[in-house]
Image (cartoon, rainbow, N blue to C red; front, top):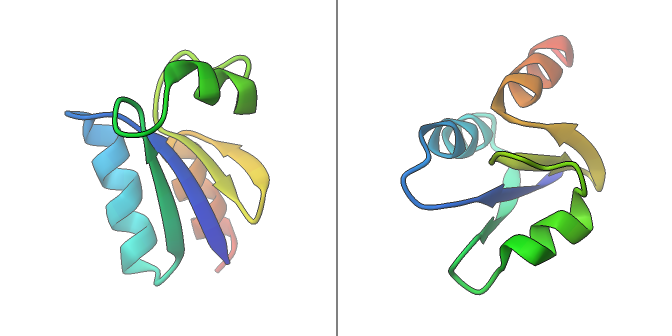
Length: 76
């Protein structure tokens, strides 16, 4: 399983999402806005995005941290 996490600096939910992925041993690519990635690029991937994190698992859009946690808990 591979994840993509759109995030930004000083985002507690972004940090929680990345920690959960690490805890589960899931590789992820972080796309941090302002560090090589732009808000416009995020909106190209997730047009309705209003917050971060925005998370994909295996190229499937999951949502934010809460949806990621639910998805991983249901996978057990």
